[in-house]
Image (cartoon, rainbow, N blue to C red; front, side, top):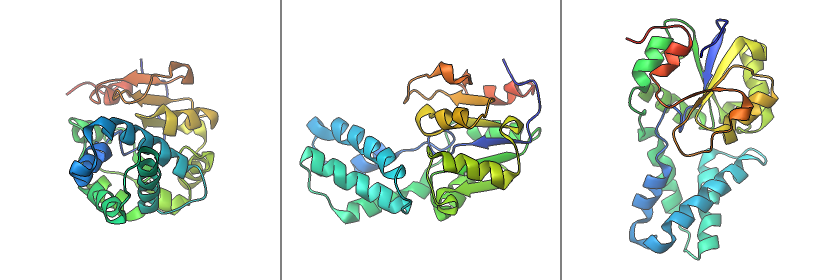
Length: 226
């Protein structure tokens, strides 16, 4: 378990991997009693599917991704869509913090290799969320900067070009095979880490190291546990 060579960078997905992406809890809170318990789970499931669908077309700001996915999900389950609720969900995002242990693991890892974020957040949110992690990042790459969202392969091409590296010179870390690890594998990024947070299925054939405890991440790079 671990990597044979020291990479030039470790690149991270942020929301859902490092930041607890609490969009379902936020939507439940914002919609309140308007979201009946009997359709809530279905609404949230469909909304997630529509978010990725909105991310695979022409670029649009993330507030529109949130709004369009909520609008489409509302129509699907027969719920009235309200624009101000979508805006409230979007504006809550920068308040979200890291999963337990993330800040410590990142600071430990930063002693050995530079850290980079590539996120589907827009630039303002990306900066604020990265600050919430309280760890040193060399570069924060936002979807707004790239003009495209993951899982689009263009996002990973942009990242490689910006960092000036080949696929074998970095390690990519994500909790999402769907948004990140499939695309990373296609792009030839051999060294990958799947942080299994339980919200997606393990796709081990993509060839990654799987961890369930973020404290194990520095260990993969030969650093002892504190």
